[in-house]
Every structure is written in structure tokens, then in C-alpha cells.
Image: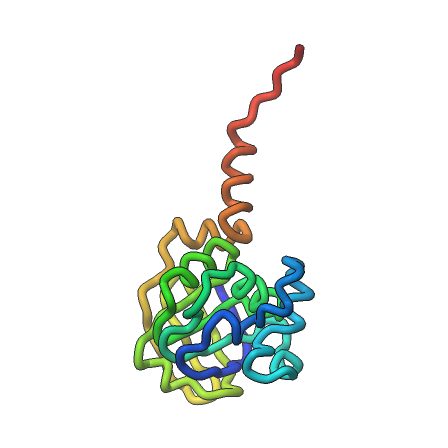
Length: 171
């Protein structure tokens, strides 16, 4: 899985209410949630995002309540990847379930700057900063997780698996 986009960097301990404030949880529509992504940090934050851009976060990204709307909002804003120092565990699981790639890189995240242009090869665990020439390595994405992401998340993955095993009976 390859990605290319511009960095939008946020700080540490960004909770799910900052990612998508509770007042916007009246829908699960990715486009509507995406239009309000990071409204808890700055109401116009998402205006700078273009499809394919990459969110870069500090420690403990996605802490707080376990709302699945948070990764949906990030995807709805057009960002398929979050690179972070570390992630809250429930957010980590929700992200992959919703089809959002997370890459945990520890202190290496400090090498990435807001506005940098990145190329990512998730299958090999390689992040290349085209703006600075910096390379960051992290554990490659396991095939099982890559398959879930390629299916658009866990629901898509299960639907695909079930469709291979469905037999039609005529009565």
C-alpha cells in the first residue's frame, strides 16, 4: 500500500473529542464528519486538507472516548494515513476496523514537519520525507492488516469473506 501526501501535524494527547466534537455525532456519514474533522482544535483546520494528505500526531493520539466516528472523520476529510508517536489502544483498533492506516514511529515523528511532502510504503514500513530527505522505518504492515485496509475496514473484509462462502439454494 503506497501513499503520497502533505503533512498536517497536530500535538500530543489529541482526544477523540478534538478529532470530532460530540456536537457533530448526529451522523455517521464520512463526508459530513470529515467536514468537521479536528474542529475541536480549530474550526477551519480541515480547510487546509487535500485528499491524500497525511495526519502526523504526537503521543497518545486518539485518547478519550472510544468513538468510531473519529477515524471515520479523518478518512472523510481525505486522509488515509495517520503517522504518530503512539496511539490510544481503542483508537488504534477502531482505526483499522474503519479502514484507516496508523503507523507508530515513536520519537521519529519529531523529524516530520507540518507541510512536508511524504511518500509511504506501508507494506515495507518505509516513510520518506521528500521535503527533507529523511527516511523513517517502522514495522511493516502485516498482510492480514493490509487485507483489512484494502477492503475498506473490517466490515468490508468480512463481507468479502462471506461472499466467497455463500451458496444459493433454490427451493
